[in-house]
Length: 534
Image 1 (tube, helix red, strand yellow):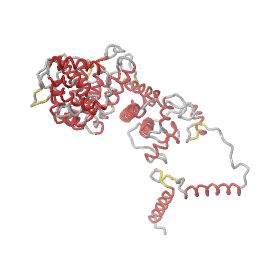
Image 2 (spheres, one colour):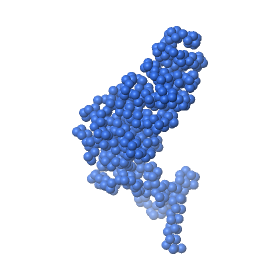
Image 3 (tube, helix red, strand yellow):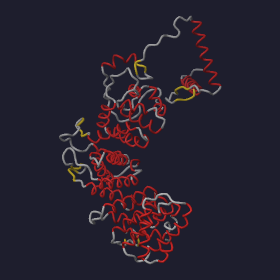
Image 4 (spheres, helix red, strand yellow):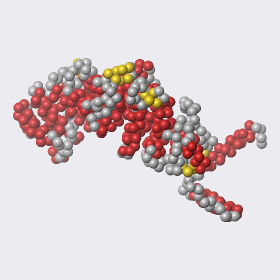
């Protein structure tokens, strides 16, 4: 085969490559002993592609390159400036002196894009060279024309897939797209075009009836690639202040994302994936722009709470519960939606009160531990002792915000044992409340809770059966003996460094007991000196 390609006879090479492509179309693993031959073939093909060839021959040659590019050990012939330039030219995205060379054959463009996706994904050198060659400029120039040119779905999809890979793997390309190329505005417009939306108000998308039709499969695939690109280039947006112009852009994007939450895709699994990318991107929006989730007017069929449309928040809550029930890869699947709901609740009073009514309704069941049961509260409390630190922190933070960051209310709903991790991290072990802008309305207790409250164990968060007094019937001397025995056991364990006795410092943090005693002694001494005592 190598000899045939070396002959450079177009018709002969075409026939041989067609047979090779048919045999290797499903080949994803390669024999080591044939590696050098594959490298040689790769070098010949990239050279052969530089000639003036018929489109059919170009497509076949690119198909062979795509198959060879699956082998990470044979990428050297493709990861050169000349090799990547040749592929970019055939993909129609070669950026040269602000002129994009037009390649008329769409099949050639598609195959070249597939080759570039494989090579960029697998080769760091290729990533560097594509950044130097400014291929992202060529891609964005074509994306700008989507509204004018009737490009097939596959070309648009692989344009967006390549853009996603470049922005995921190269920070400099990410910044270039976001800033120099105004990528957030461009990709938002592309998302709007893909979804085919109509607007009722500046930040409200029109929907056809109460149940809009599912987004078709091809549009869903492109929309998800756009969402992933937008996620990459907005990664730090939530952490920085934005001016009014940027805020308007993010609110426009947020309104589109709200629409994405409210529609379905083709099938449950595809809908779940589509909503997952939407939630991830919503978490990147500046906090003050999340108000667009509540902007739409209350209409017939809407879920209304305190005069506000809660449809989107309700969808997010259902999404959270489905992820909880699935129990798979909790960190990746849960933390984005938990963080989003937490920040939304912190920023918007109506959202917090709606979520509290759904997640932490007034307590009635005080016989079971807070983590026992199938209610959403029970599932979230169980996460508060999860082995993954991020998961347990996100779950605890969400519930803490729903409790208006009040320690007593937090302990009431979760039990002190479950709450201890967050309270220790916040320096709130002694009680109190975090600073936050919350209303002063009181928590409403049910009659069942009021009746059981004196008997609730604050550590477990439930009514415990009264246990017999172990010291009943002992004399005072026996009690003193048992107490000293216990003290000596603790002292021995402490000296052997098996345990470390801890106390709560005046600032509310857990600290070694000896430090607490020392701090208290210093405070007492300082107080005495202030009063002029010796």
